[in-house]
Length: 67
Image (cartoon, rainbow, N blue to C red; front, top):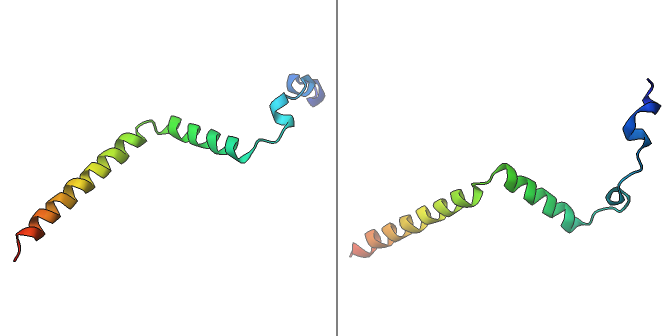
């Protein structure tokens, strides 16, 4: 069996591969793939922001007590 006999060589190309994808489609595919690999990203970002808000609140309280 030669390389010319392979199934993928006989099939016609998909319609999507004929048209170049726009930048928005590429960005959407990248982000959806990234979020599929890291499903808890927003959870970690939210926890980090909450920690920063609490830290800022503590710093304001400490600096407000000094005269």
